[in-house]
Length: 143
Image (cartoon, rainbow, N blue to C red):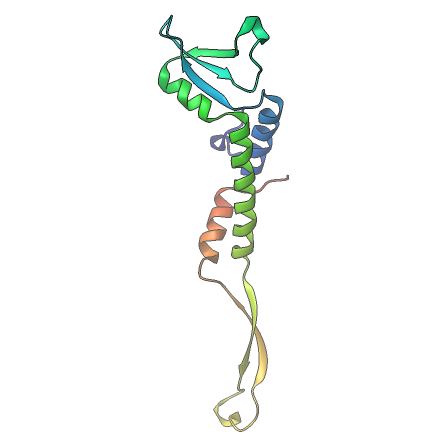
């Protein structure tokens, strides 16, 4: 299992998670209480009723807190979050790049009578340092 704690790149983690989410039974998944047993279970509501012996596809019995958390992390939700993270990274990469700006300078105080000459400077946008820090913390990797 890939986690950020393994020093894997964010891209590797997202690719692994995306692959698993695409292979899993799609969501939504719901946490439901079985009134007869009092047990919480997760069901794939995308699996038509009538399969698996006349009920929804039950995938796990657990306590209420875990059931609600796991249901919230269904494959469709995971895929949507991956899409948002990738789009955000693209924006952050654009912000992180310094911009080239042309300014006009005079050669010296005595040259004030001559027209200024153009000089290209590299200028950081206000948020560029923070954006580069984020990109360094979560490297894109090979993907």
